[in-house]
Amino acid sequence: MEDLTLKLKEQIIEALNLEDMEVDEIETDEPLFGEGLGLDSIDALELIVLLEKNYGIKIENPKDGQKIFYSIKTMAEYITEHKS
Amino acid sequence: MVYINGTASLSPQNSLDYNKFLEGIIEYEKDFLQSIKPNYKEYMKPIAARRMSKTVKNGIICSQKALQEAKVDIPDAIIVGTGLGIVSDTEKFLENMLNNDEKFLTPTAFIQSTHNTVAAQIALKLKCHNYNFTYVNRGFSFESAVIDAIMHINEGKRNILIGGTDEMSEHYFHIIRKNGRWKKTKVKNTELLNYTTNGAICGEGVNFFIISSEKNENTYSEIKAINTFYKPENSEEINIKLKSFLNNADTKINDIDLVITGHTGDAVGDKIYYNFLQENFRNKPASYYKHLTGEYQTANSFALWLGANILKTQIIPDFIRLNGNPISKIKNILIYNHYFDINHSFILLSQA
Image 1 (tube, chains in turn blue, green):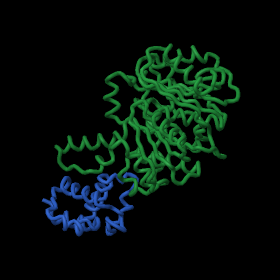
Image 2 (cartoon, rainbow over the protein chains, first blue to last red):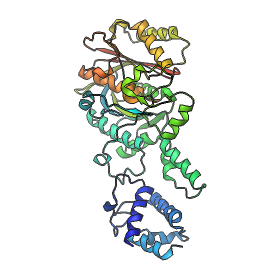
Image 3 (cartoon, rainbow over the protein chains, first blue to last red):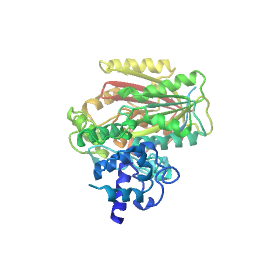
Image 4 (tube, chains in turn cyan, orange):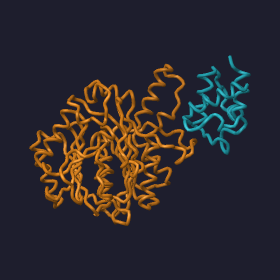
């Protein structure tokens, strides 16, 4: 799981163009949206594509996104459960 | 009267800090020159910068610095000139389409690839709802922005933020190199004038200014006149345009204390500058600058930055001197630029 969270942080930095951020600046439990990292709806689209492109996971119900993308930890858990 | 009250430049040289710029030229031997990357974290949070390409970030930094220097909070207009816009994001989007077989497309690069992104992002950051315009007129892009700003000042506006921005990408560079515009080999910028081959040195940069109706303690210079002309037939026509331009500005050739030209190392293009100087300003001091920045559609914005700083400081660094003609007090500077003999322009700067 630790390897996956690290890899996810690297992928998020690349996908969201956070080139001036380091992986240790993103907390694993911190909320990705709102008061946490501060992502918005366009970033959500980027994260959906990231999951599909890198892990083959397609989110069928958009309402699930709120839980899946809550934090790096919840994303990693979802990937572990659903990776094909 | 139109004054330059604030300036900022990001280029392949140490231009963000004029004192460091005077310390010397940064040498390169490269295919094309790239702007020095500032520490973006000093100016904006990474999360705020995530959708900005290098040019957008550089535009925000330069606009901030120019506004601070001129002590202007909200300008009456934001006017930007760019030849290529945010070409790197356009390429990123197209590359993603190709590499992923038109799947997995996200909107960010596409949204940010429009030419007016720099002016728009500055306005968003400032919460400025005033006139916002981006000129994309190839080699006249920046000059068009200046002309528009002057018209706004003449109509009663007080402070206008103007900028010239262009970035160079690997793809665009290699495509354009094929048609012979850029030199075929790596270029040593410090030896630019020794090249006898065709093709220019290629580069990029972002330069911003506050143009104001009133001068203050920080004023750099006055923009006395600007004129553009398209594809002149020969040097005679350029000379006629010059005489008419100076005449309209109530200035004589003898009043010009320094000429800044846009030599690019291209044998064909530079011949036009040499003829121009020889036929009109034989005994006048002249300077050049594209060995510092490379050529790009809005490179003339760097010339304006350079001229404004020279008028304010009365310092002409040795590494931009084109000839050894003696220099007296610099009161009037003529900037003559052409973009591949297509887009020609004159700008006359005077001590304020």
